[in-house]
Length: 238
Image 1: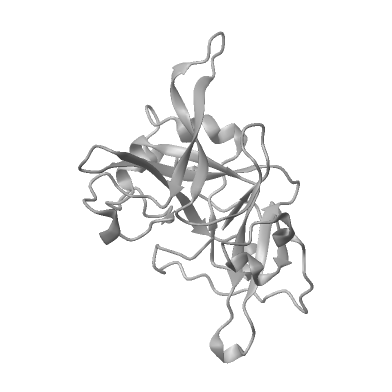
Image 2 (image 1 turned 45 degrees about the vertical axis):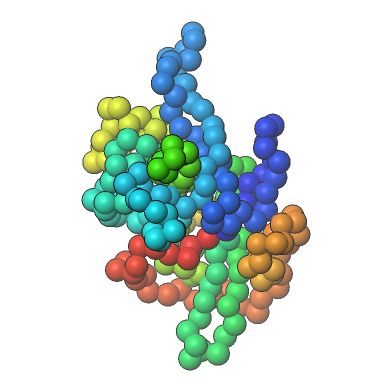
């Protein structure tokens, strides 16, 4: 799940789940008047990407994320990687540490947010799916990469973070091909995020209050796990 702090046009949301609307930012088609910066626009899309070639979404898996290492070659993502790269603003994300059954430990939820606060921009992809009757649904997914050492204590994957100085290059699908922006698809610095233990109430979509991010006490921080880079690309990351 994701969290998004209140902005001028959007209320705060503290427990955004797959299939719900998420805010994305994409490149516009014109230059800003009197500026060398490209125009950008924001819109809401369904979290769960559906490629345009899918005939019936009910027969297609829910693609809430995509592995950054292989997205440019995968049939479900390669068109969006070339033509429809977006930014997904959020104030953080939730992750679960799930120990092995043999350990006897309980699963623990964590709220992961930028250490300095504010909004972070995740690398995203967008597709518009059209039904036979002509109706359209805008959909999106978040790109993930292997976790840095801090988040690796909790999970072996994390969202790709795009730095402000790289926004223009990431969103420029006209001149920047996937190979040109591959260097951006890396883990955030180890000290970029804070990892905060929270209640398991976040596991229920019906719980939406700010109290979901209230820290809880845990006896010990989870031990680092080996990173499984061959895992299935469809992860239960958020």
